[in-house]
Every structure is written in C-alpha cells, then in structure tokens.
Image 1 (cartoon, rainbow, N blue to C red):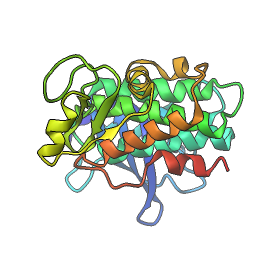
Image 2 (tube, rainbow, N blue to C red):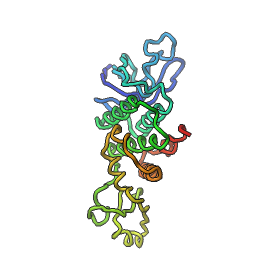
Image 3 (cartoon, rainbow, N blue to C red):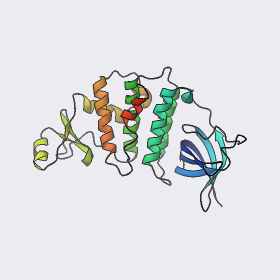
Image 4 (cartoon, one colour):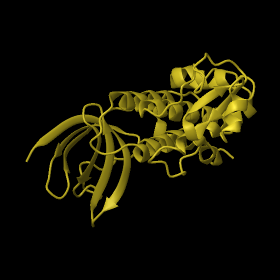
Length: 258
C-alpha cells in the first residue's frame, strides 16, 4: 500500500456508506483526487469539520484496491470567515463545484490549485458581502481563468480566420472557441458560421477577466449590463467543453443575492 501526501482544497463532500465521507479534492502536487474518510460522520470523528468544501487541508492518503482512504488530515487556518457569510460562501462553493465538474481524477495542473487559492483567499478577506452583480463579476473572472487553465480559453488577440489583431467590433463564436473580426464576419456568414457581436468594451472586459487576479476585480467600475452579457458569453464557451453539464452558470450564482 502506497501513501500520498499533499495540500488540497476540498471540492466536494458527500455521505458514503453508514458513517464515511467520499471526498473530491484538488492538490498542489497530485491534482484531482478522490478518497474516502472512514468514520468521518461520527460525532466523535477527529476529522469532523475539517473536510467540508472550501477548506484547505494537509492530507495523507492511503492508496487502496477498491478506493483510496484518507489516513491523516490537518486543517490549514482559513484566511478569513468565508463559511460564516452566505453570499461569500455561495461564490466560493459554486466555483469549487465548477472545478470539481471540469477536472478528472489523476490530472495534475498547479495553475488550477493556484487559482482556487487565489479565489478563496480573496473571498475570505472581503470586508463586505459583494452585491449581486459584483458576485457575478467575481465568479465570471474565476471561471474564465479556469477555462484557460483547462486549455479551452479563447484567443483574445487575433481573429480566428485571418489571424489579424482583434479590434472592436468583434464577433464571438463559442462553438469554435474564438472570435472573428468585422472584416471576416461576412465571409464566415456565407460559410454558415454566425457569431455574436460583442457590445462596446466587451473584448476589453474579457481581456481583463482573463488576466487579473480576483482581488484586482473588486474595485473595478463596470456597467451592469456588460457584466451580465460577458458572463453569459463565458458560460457559452463552457457549454462547448466535454465535461460541462450546464449547472454552474453565472445566473445560478446571482440567485442567492436576490
């Protein structure tokens, strides 16, 4: 029997058998991992409260034949009270659920771990619960950066057809994973390829979301309608990835802020 040691974020926690918990986690060294914490749902369990989604934990996992088992778990002190505020927890919970959905066990990418850490640390340090549209913006930025970590982020600098530099107005083609310039749009339509024309400053906002940290998005002043349209466009790009199930959308995040 081998052992794995890693620092992980808990993505999902669900009951397994009578008193066990099945955990999905993402680690710095080993990436996505699934393991069972034996007896963790008993009131006397030493891991009680350490294995909830959004928590950062140092773990030792024993590799098994039927399933891997959690042998040791040590909680990292949180950066702030993320689980004490429903709005903040909603953004973080939806994002780690998206990571869980879009990643496979055994696949390692340190940039995904770093992204989770950036998002959750920033949310934990917020002085106030964000507004509905600010929550949408933070989730859109986190999910868009995840798309690039997964290798599915669209090219934002050049036209997908002529390879010339993109300048507004531009057209989005989520099914093709890119954007076209205005000059190429008529030819693409003749080929049966129709795009969505981005609103003014839409391309600029997408470039910001693709590069800025979560903390850098907080003070930005952006028109509410533009945030909504670009977050829905990001959802459209996700809809053409293999593991997408249509549940973790930006509109779902804002429901909790009504």
